[in-house]
Length: 177
Image (cartoon, rainbow, N blue to C red):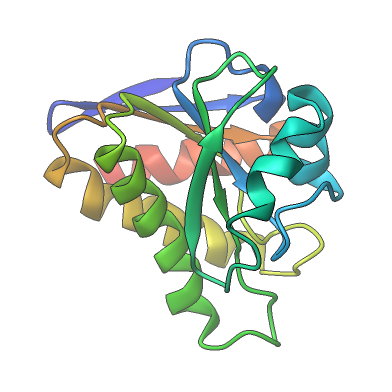
């Protein structure tokens, strides 16, 4: 499902972040060392090949809320933007750090002239961030930042489960009235 907002396109899909063929940059819900992990990081690293971890080493470690960019290697995208989300209850202030993830990713995509970016639900898996709270921060931040950008024209939220995708669709419908 897709929407228009201030001349930009927003979309929600249920699927695999590593299979977004029509997207310039996919977002890795990274670990501090930018290495293969579970969840999103594992899926992206497996699909991209070992070069992704090698490329990340020169940027590691990163702190919660930070974002860096590497080539996408064997992924069907140009780049991977790696962002370290906060571990809920450990990295504080959690809300601000998660907001920073989305902001810094969008600004980095803009700097690198990426037309489209696909986000997973950052920090909601093993990092324990409450899903609904993370969803609200993600959507609010994208709505706040996206209209300012010249190059980034399209943001897709890629959710692993249909239940999560439905929650994002409802949030966008509510936001757009």
